[in-house]
Image 1 (cartoon, protein in one colour):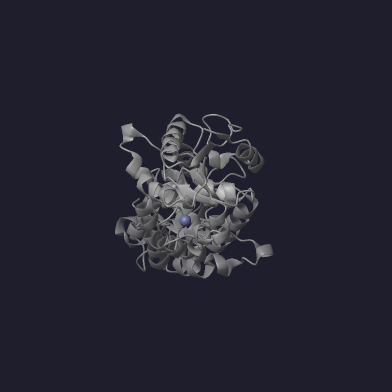
Image 2: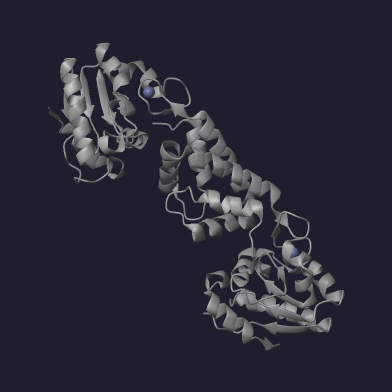
Length: 199
Length: 199
Ligand SMILES: [Zn+2]
Ligand SMILES: [Zn+2]
């Protein structure tokens, strides 16, 4: 039996969701068609809207629907002189959920990985360098993941900070090495922040 | 931290997917935005298209993009005089995948469940009665799930068949009682078909 064109297109498209194989994709498609068509339509519209409207903040590179994001636009946060460098927007979310950090962010959207062709330009080092050069940042907190690539990226950015006479610190390794920052609980993350050391 | 409007709408909309909680929804949204925007757009379009275009076959009630589905339109299948009654379109798919059944289907889109307000009209008994009355069906194979509601529904339709002098049979219980037809392997399903008994 051939699935009808729109149905097989939907099953195929659902495979873009992480961890969804062909069998699960088929079950999801039938579930939505049988039991939740308004949910399916709503999801379709939300996806198109999000993929179209959500870009990146010009200043910190995190997801934003405006040229500059809410955090970067916040004068109180600018006044802290703190800039926390993370690998992804979900890391920003994880840190914000601790409620303890009041400074700005810079989101690399990845990490240095020369073998994959990801060099300084791909992780926004030109943008970060302009930020460091304008003199409003007193300390850069390096919160990249505690992996080999994350450490190498932190080291690279630490050197750049020294060139601009900006203090650089690395969050403490309270989290398991090889783990992912966004999966760590808030308490561990707070300890990692408070235990940061100058590098 | 507030997620931006389009992002929080997307996270909320992803909750319509079976088994996706708030944390998973957020991870999926960030995954699509960070790594697979074209996949996200494609999925959005496929969802809107499928929810809009896919209706139900006038004759058998399964999913169809045309007024009458391919199976119902197939003269060879009409000539068998066989009609298999199942609860859902995914059951049709499971039976078709065995490649052994050549007759027609009737899809209840559920089962009798008086406590939930699902009576004969809600599962298309008016449509099925017209089909039985026009005299082209020789045997109805009752392939509802082997659950309490599935058995009660099969019994109800069996009575209707007797009134129209149409033979009714129930697929053999080769499958675990309480299980779902669409989850059974093809071999078990074939045995269940070949071992069917007149009721
Ligand atoms: Zn920003
Ligand atoms: Zn049909």
